[in-house]
Each structure stands twice: as C-alpha cells, then as structure tokens.
Length: 620
Image 1 (cartoon, rainbow, N blue to C red):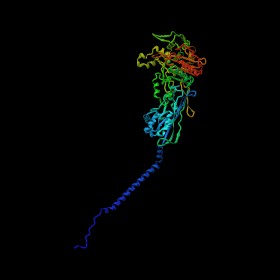
Image 2: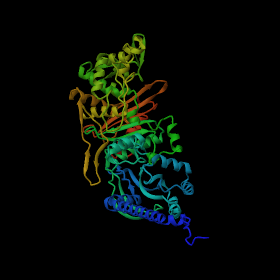
Image 3: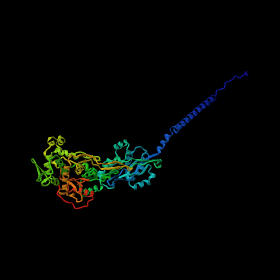
Image 4: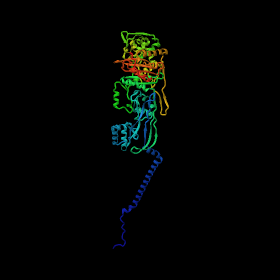
C-alpha cells in the first residue's frame, strides 16, 4: 500500500538560472569599466586639446604659419664702378633667374619640363638643388641670366610647374667690353670656404652668390656687395604666392669711383690692339699718386665672367700663349733696360761719382778684361746730357763702375724698386735689385761660381739689365718720382667711394712713402737730361709744340729671344707734371718705335692734342 505522503524529490539544478545574476553583475562591471575608460580618454583628449590650444597655442600657430610662409630673398644691386668723369665702367642690368623649391619640386615630369625649357638636364637641376639647398622650404636658384623667351614659357606653364618660379635679379654688366678688363677684374661663383667665412662674419651672402675674384671687383668687394633684402609671403600647397606679409628692401652696394681716365685708357688699348702689341702701360699723377691708366695687353672682356664663364669662352683665354688673364702692369717683371739710367744718373750725381760735365768716348763697345760689352750705337764723345739723350751704354758702364753696385742698389730701392708699391689692388710683384750680398744669398745653393759678384754684373746693372727686374707700375712710379722732384708716392686707383645715401665713405689721398736722398739740384739735372732726350735724343716721338715732355727710351734684352723689349717712360708738362707714363711692348725692339707710340697716344688724349706726324729719331 502506498503511503499518502509522497517523498519530496529535489528538483534538478538549472545552471542557466543560477548564473543569470552573476552575468548581470559582470555586464554591469564591464560597462562601468568601459564608460570609465571612455571618460578617461575624453579627459585626455580634452587635456591635450587644452594644452595644444591654450598652453602652446601661439607656438603651434606660428609653426603652422611658418609651414605656409616663404622668404623670397632679394639680392642687393652691386655698386657701380665709374672713371674719373663718372663714366660707367661696371654696372648692373636686370636679368631673370629661375628658382625651384625642393619640398615642392619632386615630380619628375616637372623637372623634365623645366630642364627642357632651360636647355639643361634633369640631373643638372637635381644636382644644383642638392648642392645649394639650405632647407627644403627655401627656393634654390637653378638658372641665371635666363632669356626672356624662356621666362615667358615658364610663366605660361606655371600652373603645371608647382614649386618653380622666376625672379628678376641684377647681373653684372661692363658696357665698354674689354676696356680696363684686367684692372676691373672678374666675378665668380662663391665657393664653400668663402661662403662659410662670409656667413660667419654676418655679411649677407647666399651660397649661390657671385663675388669679385680679381682686380677692383675683388679689392673693394665689401663696398660693392651691398646687403640683401627679402619679402615674406604666404603660399599654397603648390608653392603659389597667396599674400605678402612683410617686405625689406635690399641695400645697394656703394659706387666706386676710380682715378682712371677712361679716354686715356682707351687710347692706349687701341694702340696695343691695332698693332697686336703684347705689354703694358701705366700712367700716374706725379703730384698725388692717382693712377690715370693701367693697360695690360692682351686683355679680356670681364662680361664673360659676370654669371660664370662658359667653357667656350674659357678655353681661348686659358690656352692663349700671351696669357690675357695676367695683369702685366703689376704681376709681370721685366728688365727695365735704359729706363733705369735716370736712377743711375741720380746716384752718380749725388755720390759725386759723376757730374754734369762728366764725359766719355763711345766706340760702340766697352771692354772689361777680355769681355766685350756692346752699346747699341757708336756715339763718339758724349757728356751727361747727350749720354742720356742718346742712351749711351758705354757712358753708364764707365760711371756705373765708379758708383758701385751697392750704391746703385741703395738708390734704386730708395726710388721704390724691389718693394711693393702698396697700390690698392689684390696683388703685385716686387721685382729685384741685385747687389753682391743679394747675389751671394740668392744663388748660394748653386755654388760659389754662381753666387760671386763679377765686374760684368755691375756693367749689366748700370744699364738696367742682368738681375734688375721691375714691373711697369714700379717704373711709372719711378718716373713720377723724378717728375715731382723726389717724392715716392703710394699709387692709388680708387679716388672715392659713395654709399647708397650719397655719403662719401672712402677717399683716396696722397700718401708719401719717402723722399729719395737726392738733392733738388741733382734731381733737376736728371729732369733736364730727360727733357733733352725728348728734344735732341731718342724721345722725339713725344716732342709736341704745345706741351713740354721729358722722356727716356729703353730696350731690354731677354733670355732666349733676339728681339728686345721696348720701353718708353715720360712725364709732362715739364714745369708742373700731372702725368707720368711707363709703357712696355714685349719683344718690341727699340722703345720709341713701339712703346713710344703708346705713350704718344696717351699724351695726345690727356692733353687734347691734335694728331700730327711723328718726329723720328734713332732709338735704343
């Protein structure tokens, strides 16, 4: 029998039902954690935004502006170079340059198109950008002196040439071509060392600038260069200008006025060119030391160097056997020949080794022991004046020995030989004046047979031969010293410098180096002898009725050539000289017949003399 009270059977547990409360708690926990994370994330973002916008807002705003801003540099126009009358010898003309911004010009199609327009290769442009890039935002000049037709094409294609622009720039220009080329000098690209040095000095140069390399352009670079300016502009992503924010004008370079007389310079250069002469001529004002002319022939056109010399222009200059790039006025040394005799005459009179009444007989040669020393002519009986006028070597052989080599050397140095003149140009040779001590020291490494002084050395020295070497500039200064009565002056080329505001910032002036130890009376006798050379001797080519000229001719023997160098020195007017000239024609033979033509043309131009038939005379 079944009991009415059934046993209670426990229910079977349901896991799902038991986990529901736990799951809900987990979900709630996760939701809370996620919400907290989101809140923290937003808090971080808000904090970061607050930091960026409030704390460093100005700084980041400036950086953002900088990413859109560009500095368009403007180069300063180079100062002009003018002659004594203000005639322009060097100035500037506006030419276009093409720039590329490295950060924008990356498309090879753009590079190809620009290269095609400029007549360059893509590699050329890429290398220029790599070499000259300062940072990725600053434009790099990839071409200069670009023809206007090319500029027009670039402007037409500009929408397709992102990062490429054209800008007008001043380019050096020499309106008279090769006139005074060696004196004015050359321009050249700045090199890495020059740029670093100038940048460290804060002188405002770009790494693709041009600067003076030789001559006046080099010597007065710091005045001529000026200070660059620039314009700050905002650009878009394609490098196009949106607006101008700030502008600073460039400061033009100062104008340099030379003492040079361009008309006298041109007259001399024409004689050299027309006769294919090689040589030099220098004219100095004996009262001040101002250089009126400096001619070196052959010369070159400095315009070829204005934007970097091209290979087709460089080759004929560098391979020319007459070396047009050498400034013969001060970087070439020559034996002065008979133009040295006024110094010997002054030394002889001052030491008492000769007088104005001294005489000699010239049979056409002189014998010292078994050696024969020739004279260029048979002069017969000569005295102080006729020996100078006829340039008698025998007379100076005899009295040169009486003076002695040491005293000749001393007086030659007193006249400014064997030393730099101190002219305001980058370089100059000093030449040499021998003496027994000089020869012993100079040739000692070759042995005593070469370093010993012989009597023949004295004879050679007495007529400006042997180891006597001078520059045309030095001989012009010697002539000026005789002309003014004995003042050795420092020659100067630049008479004044005027800045962009019209202020004179530099003034050339008379500078006395020394007075030669020769009395006024003896110096006047030397001057008279040179005047007599013009009227009665070898210098008749400059015997003008309108102006009295004192002169001395010379022919200097050279090693390995039968033809001598022709010299001619002179000064005028005799009573109050304002011009002293020294001219040389290499292998020109007799001085009056070649260098005399140069001096004559210079005097005619300087004194505005009519062109008349030349007076002829036998000349050494």
